[in-house]
Length: 98
Image (cartoon, rainbow, N blue to C red):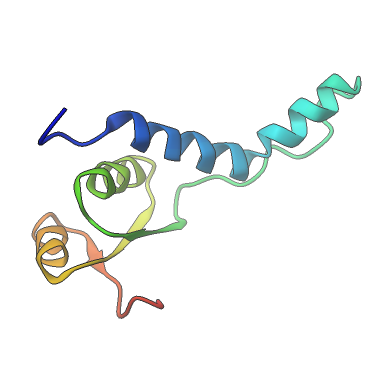
């Protein structure tokens, strides 16, 4: 939809983040091999730092999800989007590399 963020893309991003941190692919493989709960449940998101490179339509939605999970959200992007992120209460990274 023109002018709207791709919520599906932001949701897929979070699906991948959670799958990686909670080791869901490894657990699925272990389950298929007949082992139940072969790994620890992985790491939680609360208190972790999420870096957003580009605070456009999708980046803003991803940042909002990170905030909802209790993460510290650092944003970097073009000057206009950095200003928008700052106005919305997000922390701006010291540099692109940070």
